[in-house]
Amino acid sequence: MATMADVARSAGVSVATVSHVLNGTRPVLPHTRQAVLDAVEELGYTTNTLARSLVTARTRSIGLAVSAISNPYFTEILQGVEAAALDAGYSLLIADPHDDPEHECKVVRLLHERRVDGMIVAPSADPRGLLAYLGRHDVPAVFLDRLVDTPGTDGGPLFDQVCADNAEPVSRLVTHLAGLGHRRIGLVAGRPGLSTTSERITGYRSGLAFAGLAYDERLLVHGDSESTGAEQATEALLSLGVPPTALVTGNNAMTIGVLRALSAHGLSVPDDIALCCFDDFAWADLFSPRLTAIAQPGRDIGARAVHVLLERLAEPGRAVRTVRLPCTFVHRTSCGCPSPSEEGTPS
Image (cartoon, rainbow, N blue to C red; front, side, top):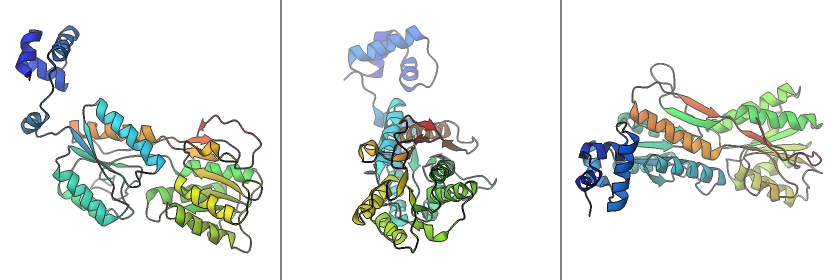
């Protein structure tokens, strides 16, 4: 098996130069870099990751703790994280906290015990144990999708965070429905305690106010971010003396539950009730009618989280930041509009 010294001899450079080329630790002249890469290819040299980690105390691995990996949105995030990590030369260890605070602490501890260099975590609705563990062990971490408001000593957040914009896109859905003449617009919101849920509720109420509509607490129900809960929540809305004429759903899993409940009641979308969704997914335009939705930039969120984490690893003392990425309004027909353009426009 070829060694780094063999590569250095073949390329006519020092072992240190080979190390700089392979690890990106110092700029190297283009022709020298190419000579090293040619020697690596010719000799079939592979990096001894274990040996390097013993020397550098780095494993070049990232832990990812994200619940509901089967959710198409989180699948897109995973693809973004994996691509960005691989491009930077990092491997990925994945765990599912199941949105359970106790299990969340367990998987984060297991990832930490495997000596990942840092973690990307989508926090549960009760992240106190998570925060305590990461803080106690000084683990570099980036929170993904869901924000945590616990402030640091300077009043800002304790950890870097990356998410989509949540409030304004939901407000846009509400005002769009109001513009179509709807006056009773319901929201099937996600799990209480999640920042995504509270921000989308804020957007819902903001949209109502902008449209000059009064907020009716009976029209806001929680589907707990999953299909079965959304189906039950929709049943509650439909049982009202004056049910809503339009609905906004808080994520793609809940959209499925809402559609199931509407179908069980023999209601047609949008003829009997209009529907707009937060979260687009690959088959949303295959439904009849096609679903008007807010599309989140899942892959970009995942990739940005990796970049933010790597910047944190390179500069531990840098200021903590929260990065928000814009969503896209995808105008289809479930809102009741006749054959709108399907081109997305930034929200």
